[in-house]
Image (cartoon, rainbow, N blue to C red; front, side):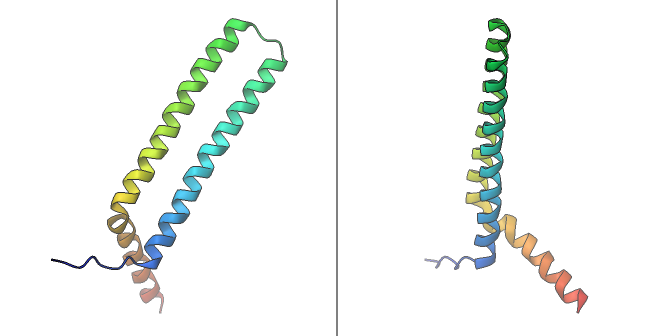
Length: 98
């Protein structure tokens, strides 16, 4: 039975940073849509227009949130492969510089 390799701390740090930025981007998107809809509500726009914008915005939020969640899940499963390659080339660049 093979022993699992200990995870490289750099891989974990890079993954954690990417995950934080992805979650922050989704939170900012939700806040922007909420603010925009609130401004539209206060402008006393037509109810049909508000409904159409709410439905369209809801789909945008739904699909963007789902895609970011899927990306985080994929990165969680395959982070060793994804980040090891980045780390390899970062190390090569450092070696080349001296």
